[in-house]
Length: 133
Image 1: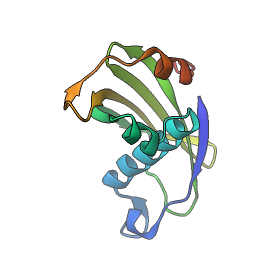
Image 2 (image 1 turned 60 degrees about the vertical axis):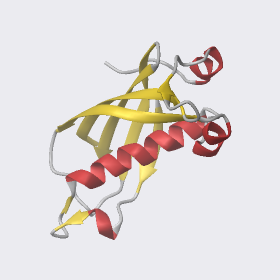
Image 3 (image 1 turned 45 degrees about the horizontal axis):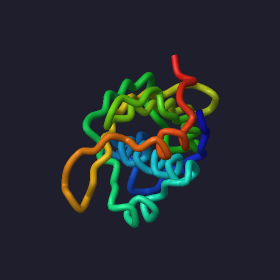
Image 4 (image 1 turned 90 degrees about the horizontal axis):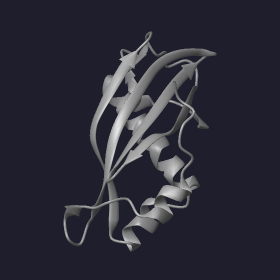
């Protein structure tokens, strides 16, 4: 599990007090990309391999409203790999309290062939798996 700081932006605000629900999805995507880059598979590396991760679905549980007044800390990591899919979890904290939890399913595609592919062993080995309850 890796932790990332995230400062909200003006466009993330709803009524200048709370984060827009769609902004939370953008934050999760940004942090997931950062984590994949840390593992050695940036969007540019994947592009050069004719590969891409696509989100199949996400489950979001808001624990409490997310304020725009404090930065967020997002912990993320891969919970499990299965064939062509990755289950990624995120825990969003603000002021030391959990404000949201997400679980997203991602699948790997071959961009040139436009089809889902099995995750290769070298990509599996690049990511830490586990650390989420």
